[in-house]
Length: 362
Ligand code: NAP
Ligand code: ZN
Image 1: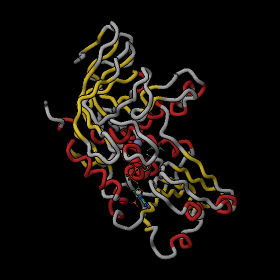
Image 2 (image 1 turned 90 degrees about the horizontal axis):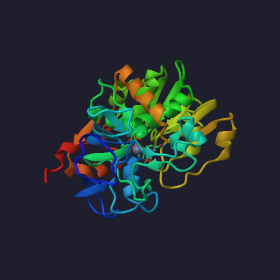
Image 3 (image 1 turned 60 degrees about the vertical axis):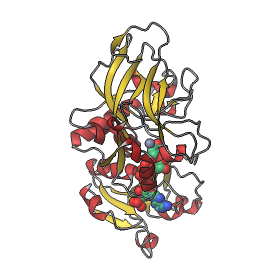
Image 4 (image 1 turned 90 degrees about the vertical axis):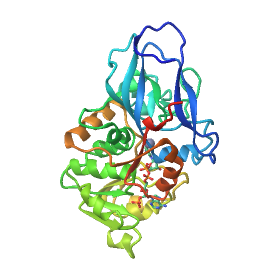
């Protein structure tokens, strides 16, 4: 069904959309027509213009984090335009430029939700994909042309950001903004961003905008010039001889965005006394930690999981105000399998974004 404008809620109706779907972890993506859940009176329908590829999509759909529910469509970096609103919707109008991130619902009543931490909902937030929706179906993500979302889980994309550079902010942007804001990273501080991928390149730009002196810690110096263009003062190759000894005790704050196994204890030793490492990277394997790396110098090891909806809006406005978005490579719907391999190889600067207008008309 093609809903347009403001609809009166008269009971179940379904919305079909073209989407990229996998039927198993090792199968290629295929174009399918899927049904969105029935829109309710407090939902909006969004025509998706751009969908970012996050490494979490890859971990999920390749079953690296456990069993995904197939057939599955992933994607939680969504930018588009509101095409229809339910009769009770008050925040949005048809034509609004909007984004949706990793959450499409939560109980909206618990202590965490009321405090703006829908990401920590005590009754279980509904993830944008591979999660049980309010009607019991499995949520399907943003590699598609349309999505139905509760109006409270939608953010406004500032006019100065185009859809392609805005889409990745809905996950990579908020995931790095939130710990940098929570730990009040500020001028004069020495910050290291560990891993210069999708999350890392947002972390650099946001930490620089907060006034910190930023060093990129990357596996090689291949990305040094582009790191500088993002505002980093230097790049260090973590594979250089004597790296952990040479840079011991240098940093006030490390933002760890690595998606694979690392020497966590070694990196903690790069912190100054009382320094903080915020982990956002989520490698599938458990990571070993030597407690003396934490205890000596009273270091803080903390984690962070995306952010709440109000904070996501704050982040979008912050990026627009400081004049940056994500740096992206735009691809068509038939290029996603190849793009996944390039993400895993660290070969993208810095986010692939799917142009949803490349879905075939029929
Ligand atoms: P990405 O674009 O692939 O970037 C990850 C970076 O990690 C790479 O660019 C690379 O940096 C480094 N890296 C990769 N493999 C490595 C290895 N074997 N050894 C050392 N470094 C390696 O991924 P992303 O989308 O930014 O996501 C990063 C991680 O964050 C993923 O695990 C993802 O699931 C997770 N994540 C978490 C949240 C959250 O809420 N906490 C949200 C989104 C994503 P260099 O090339 O510079 O070395
Ligand atoms: Zn993500």
